[in-house]
Length: 487
Picture 1 (cartoon, rainbow, N blue to C red):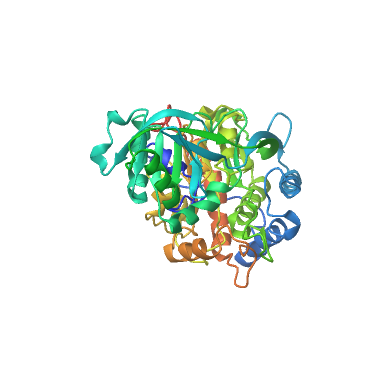
Picture 2 (picture 1 turned 120 degrees about the vertical axis):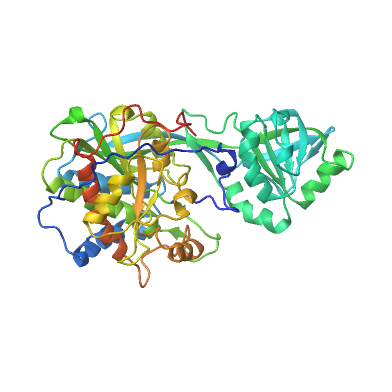
């Protein structure tokens, strides 16, 4: 899962507009149909099946599953092999692979010019954006009252990161060029890993070009900037970025399980297969980020759900199984799929995302990322109840909604949710995020927990079968978010 914490980048969270989503009225029909699979494995056997997948995908042989690497290609091949074995058809123009083009650049070096003085510094970090700017006026923001139509085209200066985090969305919506965030030295170091890593975007999308500029300025750079501007952070500044880049390709994996009534549309189940490759300090003994929980576990659950769906009675709607690339780089594989779907998005009635599920033990409630944002809530509650499961939704539903691949489909008119017991216990989730998330120790550790994941798989099977049945569920005609045009 991609995390956007206060001190972790990318800073896209700052640039996203605030969007208020309203749920469409749920359909009244909530009775799920039988899962229908033959020889459904027991809880213990399901844990073993999931662990077998994870042992392979999270092994050192796969090198952290970074897109564009041999480990990434091995991961794609593994999924394709399994989908073929289960009886799926190629889901993308006769192929199981949807090639995704990327462009990558090392984090750009930034030079700021103020009153004719060029300023470079080790604590001057470009967080987002690489488009040069010239003679942009600085405006200091002390409260929400300072953000109005007057910030159009200007670069805002924040002395408080929490203030920047809460107001930058509004400022960009009002046309602000971006923001300069003044930060103490310790905070600069917290930002540095995210601000200096390689940046990847979809090649045809030009993600960085023309985007807002977010800049962290530490004490040394701030002093230089103030001196050049005569002692105050007011006036006009220019910025020049320099970076080296490369192009590469990776692949989404798309398998299709044809339905008996393809005219009824399609549904999608997705999970991201990628992880970060290497992590940690250069001299660390173990630098492979294996990503066992994030997200070899999600791929394992997706594949086992796919196997059971293919093993059972034919569904009405077509089912697409989607293993996305480059989620960790900004939901890029899912975005590419949304922009280049195998069928028109209007024909896709629901999408189920599976991410980072090997955390909670058996017996935890389900939670839903995307709750009250789609017409899927009633069917989720009905299916869960039929399997003796409960649904409890807390703040995580809002906290993570834009941080997972379902968002790429959700805001383009496809009802998308992440359903998982891993997000149902905040203490368990927080413990993982603070100790293993994006670290080399996210591997199969002693006590690696698959109880909740194995218990969730039957829920996924039942949900997919429910959504694939037209009489039980259909997306309301013309359904879209209030601000559904995009991010």
